[in-house]
Length: 219
Image 1 (tube, rainbow, N blue to C red):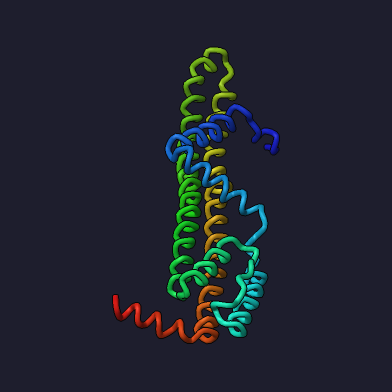
Image 2 (image 1 turned 135 degrees about the horizontal axis):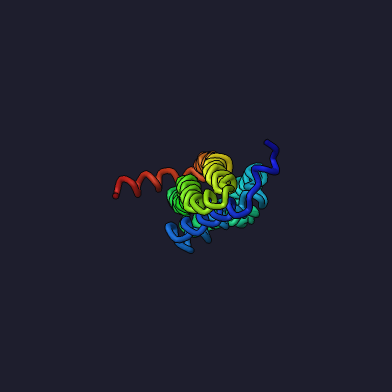
């Protein structure tokens, strides 16, 4: 047996085409669009934690030197950190900064979970369409028996089952894990920076600390 004998376009079309179509129908177009964005991010520029932290360190230095009211708001090159620091300057509250970060975190988590769920669905459906291909090939078996040639039907039955298992375990499930690991790594890096930033701001602007405690006490 050679690799060439394992290549069969109709079998691949049944398994992959059926899996993709069923996944789109089951998950919906909006979830597919979210998943496409998550896949694009895997091949795009990764989150530069070091650069963001360096820019935020400059921001903290300005706050230490000029105070929160007079300090200039610097762009970090990351839209989410730009937004959360803008919230800090407008509301003068570390809690508001953390809350803004949590909103972004929830949004990122929802998007990555959507992509992971979609590929998990595809991994679940691929073996099913492998069996569909097997049933289609077995349906051709009586015709092959009549002609004295049933090797094609049996070969297709074997290949579609094989394609379904390979697609599930070597394509769809691994992609789901890649997305999940990338999301976890970015979230850990962002959370570390936010924790560091909140600590630095508490030292740079001590007045924010008691204010936060007064707000919690009032609540």
